Image (cartoon, rainbow, N blue to C red; front, side, top):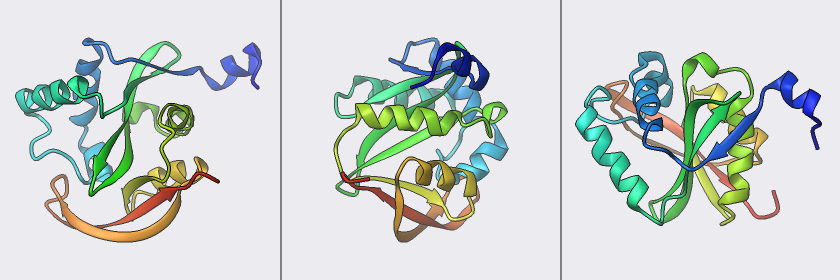
Length: 169
């Protein structure tokens, strides 16, 4: 368990329910072309605010999609959520690029795994998204397979790893 001094040293990462004001930060995060390239599997047009709002309205209205806002040192920096895809429960997260490399995604996902306790749990990451693969591995996910699909952000088919978190991880 961390004490207050170590929490300040590494920066406080907290999860909370999504507030309407958070959506503007989420939208700005998805406009970043570098982040889109890394994520690969994004919306067709990340700049389409109406489509973004419609998607988030569905997400927030669904009891089947646990979703949390990620706070770092009191600032909204991203989101983490879980959803059903291909008959399996998956997790996904997005952190603003200015917060990459600080361990925020790892700490947020680790905390979120206490919220979503269903196992096995899956995640996907483009094979060249080394940072996201590392986050998932630090949280106990292991590569369980491979897939490929059309990635809107890259305009081409992209290979990805499918990762799995089991109950004993």
